[in-house]
Image 1 (cartoon, helix red, strand yellow):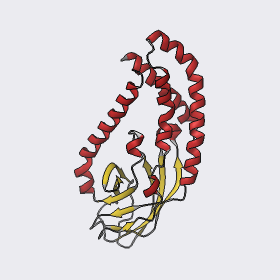
Image 2 (cartoon, rainbow, N blue to C red):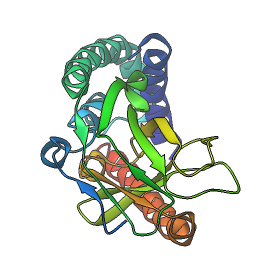
Image 3 (cartoon, rainbow, N blue to C red):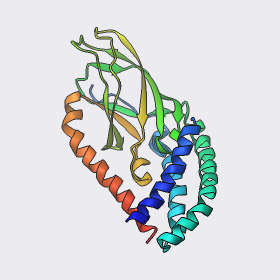
Length: 235
């Protein structure tokens, strides 16, 4: 177990170094979106997995002493792998900028969205924390007694994959227009699941809280599945 953790930790160190140096009602809907075909996060999650999985395969069958020697040789190559991966990811991110995101809205929300939801920019997070910076306009349809937080499911078709919410939006009077900027983080789960995300479903706070533990438990299961798959590559 310690050997596997050492290898996984080494891959994380390389990725971490890149994270420091790289930038990067009535069911209202808008489904005119490329994201439905390609997924909200495109194929970037798969790219993020490649260097680490390649490293695992190269360590397959080695004992601890052999691994320590191999790491000295592989780490510089891993850095080069991450550099190439980030260049590919940036190319994909550039194509995602300006894309419209498909969405739907539950009934009886205290606002309506009056514009498309646009990917303003993509932050690659150094090969770990992929983030879409979204922008859209909404209008309050009723007076509120507290600042609004907009809650949503990040979905694969009709299946919630993860949760998202904005920071507090200060306008509280019916008719007020909200110019929303929201950072949508890709879930930290295997790419085969993250790449299924293709739309947002705006929901009430009550629905968000009611489904929260179930969705978080599913995310933990998917994350653990990914960790088991990576360790299996070394066996």
